[in-house]
Image 1 (cartoon, rainbow, N blue to C red):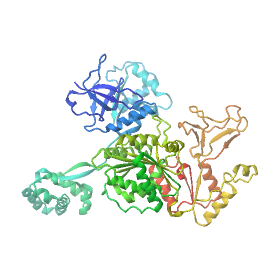
Image 2 (image 1 turned 30 degrees about the vertical axis):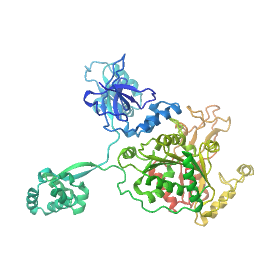
Image 3 (image 1 turned 180 degrees about the vertical axis):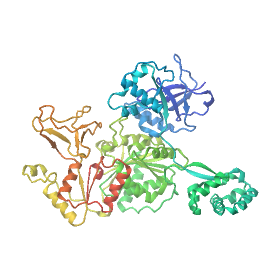
Image 4 (image 1 turned 90 degrees about the horizontal axis):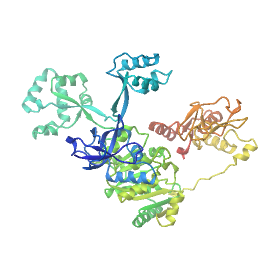
Length: 639
């Protein structure tokens, strides 16, 4: 009898032991996924960490319900990395598991409410209980969430518990699979006609149906039937999509289906995936480096010979990215993979366009704005025989599987966006990436114009290498920075809303010259806080005890830490005053002010509220790049 120790996607530090079914004991390996029962009625997808023959003593061991993988989805080095994260950041390894794997790879059971088959129908039911039973009976089964939407006038969970106590309702657990592979219909020649004599006879017989004959001949051409028939190997027939076949002959679906009904062609679903399927080639050569960049590149090679971690301290616009590209090309030539971390999702859009022109489909992109199914397929591709050579992504990319990781680049390493605040694991992606690279025996390159204090300290102590790039590419001058004392202007009542006279003058001049303007404000929403003018009361989050931000577009107060929301107050609960004033300004308020001052200007806003989807990021950037947007307002994303 064999047993497995598994990790569950729950805040649990211990591994749990389950028995393997007798008929599947040879299939499971560490890193594979299994579905196990946990608690009274729940099922979870667990990761196997050990297979052994040691039977636990003192309690009955539950049996694995289903084995999902014949090959591991988690590499041994990833499991070591998970354990290090859990230990270093003081959380459960189950928390790391929940954060690391895409949701589509974590199947969980969903509680369904059903009518108890043993219910005799003699219980005394209240009006509310009768409503719930009627609804469940009509649907055969329902979730508590669906019931609550139907019965909005009372708390349905309490009623469901009462009905379960009376034996009227029961709970059923159903495992929900959220990931479904993308497929398209393909056609193939049936085995009956994989015979030259029968095929010739069939083609002669289709003389009266020339359209069917033409479609069949086109199929044989696209499938490369000549070679397959010559070698008598039906497996050599190429895949042919039904839609592509119909378009190739200019026919219709009815013609193809007629051949399927005759048993000549067989239709079947074929998995195509959601990722790009083009040739992996370099589309253009890399740009030549300047003299300063060449010097920095050589110094990096020397520094990496002495230190596994190196800081590239380069001034803004010194061309650090071009140095990265040359390093990536060198790594790929050595058969190694590269992880390229950026702090913001919006940066991946600009960066991937640049890298794609050089590396083509050798590069993959991974971040939370991608559909979950697409992230699952990227994970699976990284485990395949032809993984991406480069992964560009944000902090969650450190969890992806790599077989031959040779270099980790952490761009803008000083950025606070690399720190995960909620929920656990509360890891710092830069530090985690350094440890990940160390486990693979890879190098780590930290790039920035303004190093974090702890990074610079490690350089001074000799722990990290240092390479400096002090010249801007093309000898471009640094921009002129002018500081305006807004507090003094407010005292003299010279401010026009959030704008100083100097800023308005420069904006007006830029717009008149058909130039564009970027306004950076590090607060989203309309106003960071609302305050009672009489007593100073400020609405605060009930969870975090911080002031709530007013969002005019949503007409609600929101906590930017935990997401708590509430209605906008109309009266102060402390003094009953009605004079509630807005303090400060966010990107929404700046946008309104720009519309008032420059009504003819095309204005766009880029913050978390306007970029919920991947297409939203790309649309805003494309409009600005093409000149459709005159003024772009945003939070840290625009910088």
